[in-house]
Amino acid sequence: MIAPIVLPRAFYNRRATLVARDLLGAILVHPFAGQRLSGRIVETEAYTGHDDLASHGRQKRTPRNFPMWGDPGHAYVYLIYGRYWLLNVVCEPAGHPAAVLIRAVEPLDGEDVMAANRAGRPRREWTSGPGRLALALDITGEHNSLDLTRTESGLWIEAGEPVPDGVVCTGPRIGMGPRVLEPWFSMPWRWWVGGNPYVSRKGLATCK
Image 1 (cartoon, rainbow, N blue to C red):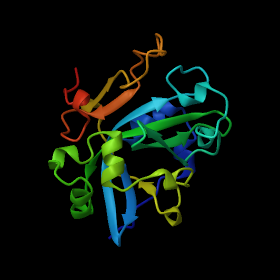
Image 2: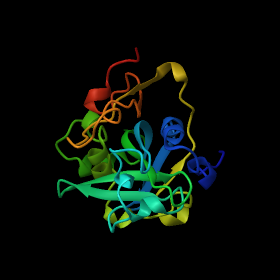
Image 3: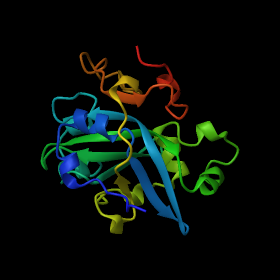
């Protein structure tokens, strides 16, 4: 069996929009409770730096967003609504705060653990959203700033099967606040695998 390939730092040292598209099909891995938890990435969103009014990087460096200013390939994990952790991957050169939000994954390994972590939820709802996938794979604020290019970190992303352009959909990002103005509100910087049942609810439509 061929050993999996962990995506290298050079993969992330590119424009956030390119990284977001190319992360589709990659495998997010988190060993937990003696098991390998993993899911195929099926939905992402790109957030560039100072020019993007929807990005945390539009502001100066803060205790919350400081991972975005570091080397590409690190995790940026933050809390929303006081209860949901969201996993982002830092990209672009250090000093240019950009990241890609992992919005949804298709469960692969460790489904029994995911089912327990998402007790009472149907399988389709285990990982079909950024907060849901963090709960299912037990990703928390403790993973903030980890180097996702090293398995020793305990959280990483492996290369997967490339997703053909013909099944990749794009559209506006989701859940942005009222301060986000055009053109950033409608920027088509969300990518998803058309028709995949684990894409968040607003992304189930097939590509136009």
